[in-house]
Image (tube, rainbow, N blue to C red):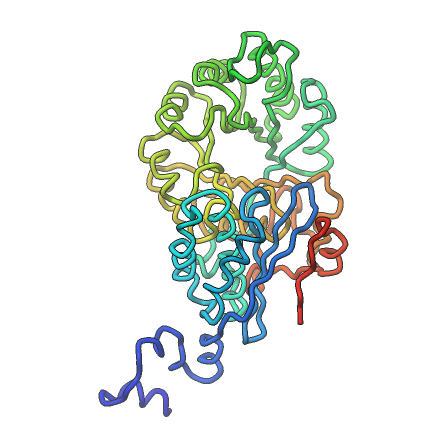
Length: 411
């Protein structure tokens, strides 16, 4: 064949750009691999969090959809990055990710809103690449270890400070909704606080939190694993005392008991207790997670994929965690798009523990996509369709936009 002969002819003239962009491929595959990005658009849905959806359009007619963390990458930052993407090949996911990090360095692309914005674009690029190559995203990440990923339900009872109310909600979620993995908040008022700003826990406060843990774990027994979240609320000493108090109970993990900045203190707290300590959603990229792992300062690493760097960065974090035999439980407060992206990663890494689901009380969460039955019996099956395997229901998106947001311009 002509193209084959050109490749085997030592006198033929072709460029590395031809090779890298796939223009030397056979038939239409070469054209697909030579696709270009023509537009990048965003919108914001008013869910239980404001979900930032990102779409990457190509001249091959393929559109990739991603999601950026709600409190992170805002739409203005993504618009700022658009000139750095137009005309580029959407299959060059890694290169474009690093390109955006470099081009946005002045805006602080090592963490925060900028890396979260880049994460949304990166997920959309994976979706587009999967559709162009006609493979699911997990295949782009190296294949799958499992067909479905365990989902843990972030639970919220009516009175979260009341142990019995939390226990009743745990029972309901296990029996009626079918989850065998749960999480509850512990940074709730106990009625014994004297100063909530200084991060100190009085003995009565620790006792109250232990009562919540006891009520929930004893109610569900061995039917479910239960984690508890502190949202970076406590001092080092208080965190150690709380963690030790909870050693008597079957705690899946205690999440973010101290602020995230000081890895030395994080290490001290983690190594001071038999209660498993989880953290990771507020450190960015592999660089942010590195010290947590190398210094054995975490028992379970919890990156938020649409926040801390996207799918490939999430894969790097998981691979590094695996070197230290640490499991990965992905924090997630996303729409179906970001949640499914995390599930694809969870399928593709050996040390996936679970993916969080934060919208069980939002009746229309699944309506944002045309597919149904996304989470069944506490598991999220990973689709074999190209890309993420989801199709946005644009009517549902439009019906739930944040005030002032505009729907994607499909034209």
